[in-house]
Image (cartoon, rainbow, N blue to C red; front, side, top):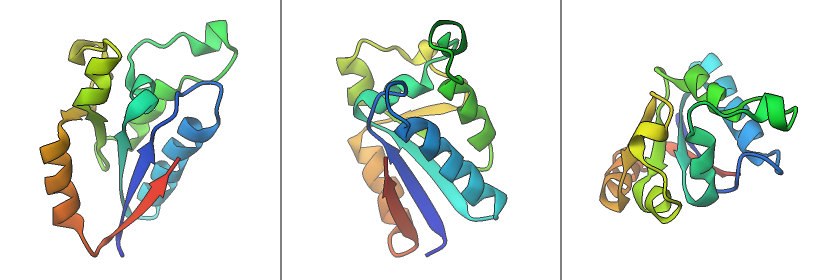
Length: 120
């Protein structure tokens, strides 16, 4: 196993999960271990650009952590999850890649046997 896919399916605020998941990805990349982040369900909110969490919630901006993963790792955002929440591609951080179920399957298939799944 030489790769990790970190899955974030919870909203970025009110839970530590998204914040911690990005740091797990960053730590993997710092150790030269391949790591990508997959945002699904409410996890897609963590890829929104211009979050004001520091001003309104006094909490670090989770969206800015995406820039620490890219370009060594990828930020994949589930298209159906975005659409169900009324989020458009231009609202996401620059490093986000929107993928559908078929593209996700291809990514998983290409990494099969070499990947650890970490769900937050």
